[in-house]
Amino acid sequence: MTPTGSTLPRRMLGRQLRELRNKSGVSVEVAREAIGVGKQTLWRMETGQPVRLNPLFIERLCKVYGASEDVTNMMLGLAEEAGRTGWWHAYGDAIPKHFDLFVGLEEAAKRIVSYQTTLLPGLLQTDEYRRAITWVDSPTMPTAEVERRIELFNRRKIRLTMTDNALTVEALVDEAMLHRAIGGPAVMADQLNCLAKVGELPNVSVRVIPLKAEAYAGLVVGPFVLLEFPRHPTAHLTEPPVIYVQGHTGALYLEKSEEVRQYQYAHADLQRSALDELHSRSLIRKIAKEYAT
Image 1 (cartoon, rainbow, N blue to C red):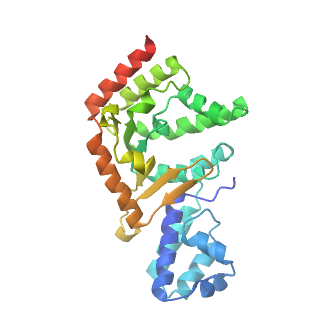
Image 2 (cartoon, rainbow, N blue to C red; image 1 turned 90 degrees about the horizontal axis):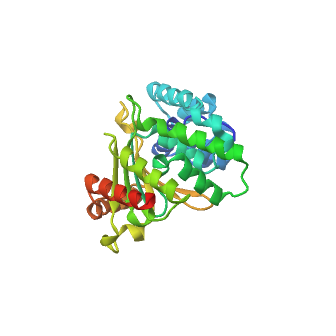
Image 3 (cartoon, rainbow, N blue to C red; image 1 turned 180 degrees about the horizontal axis):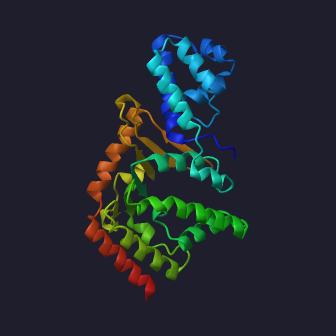
């Protein structure tokens, strides 16, 4: 996988390029011809997809769009920042293609809401739980590659316990998954005890939707992750929330305000269905004891 820079600045730059072009009335055809690229490349630039960002292209587009000197300098600054390689690119061989974007967004996020029904959120999994899932998904994967993925996985978890720039995580999980012994009873008992412990961190909330809730809206919505980003000093540069929906062969990244709003409504409903943190931890520890006996 070829490193293509830092995710959030690249997305910010793409959004600003698209807005500048729309406001100027310049067509896609004129814009792409101005920098000598195809429609696909311009689309990738404007949507913040992995693509090489030539500062000369950015400067030329700003001129074509009639951007001011201040705006042009801001755009070039974003392009420079976007060109910096994120730490996760060192693990390019261990990241599925569609997941590279998620890792970059996760690194840039200030808060994540994760609703899951079958497997625990990745950031809250133990190594053994993660290994068990990996072996099921890829039974012929060499051990060295599995351990490489575990290494990446642990690097992502560091932000949970950082004193500066700690990631805020709200996990909403269906109780049904807690009764499936991923990796066996001993692995699951350890996983649940760790889950209860991490839920005591000031920046982590773990809440369980109990079986007694019976049918609830989240079962129709399905699992998702909501990512929220830090406020930028320049207000209009603040990256809007993104919804991540993982599939077996790829992933969806939903960004339209109406799409995001629908998931925010679903999140509010899930909060109403879930136990509070204290009762959730009590239930998690109770199930962990059942595995240990």
